[in-house]
Length: 236
Image (cartoon, rainbow, N blue to C red; front, side, top):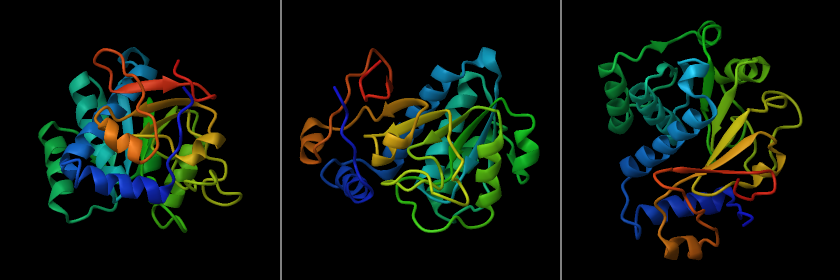
């Protein structure tokens, strides 16, 4: 099976559909997305490779997915650290932060310094709704992720990439190529530019909704919330 992609407009419409006719709340979708991310990280970077996971969190839903993933990773035995420079006042995000604080997960203000002691990085800055210019303080963070030799897992899209066209031709993110990508619900068109390990996560979409948006739900094994696919889009 070669998996079809969803553009930014279709992905946004799908999210609205899931929260209307699908009867999911935003909390549920974020929890399921973050759980998928945590399983992908566990798959590519088991604890014996190092437990220190640095999560770069943006101000939107992609960042919320990263916060949820960090909580699950903490319960798996990892030692996550959170870089979260732009915190929205929304109650949902505040609750996600409180859950991490209750687990003694540290929050840091200096990403480059935290990167020096990390074993793996999760890019949860920007998702499929990103467009335009990367604003402060994230240009330096994306540059640091691009230059580090530490493996990076990106959630849904490598931050700064165009959902349709992939990495920018110049400037911030033009040389950012994460090691791992987890596409949430369905891959986005940018995957044709991605050359690392690719996972699909989102084991909750009803067949009727998938049919309406013309994408395929992969066959998940056992308790898995993610499926790894190869460069040709076929399940590994």
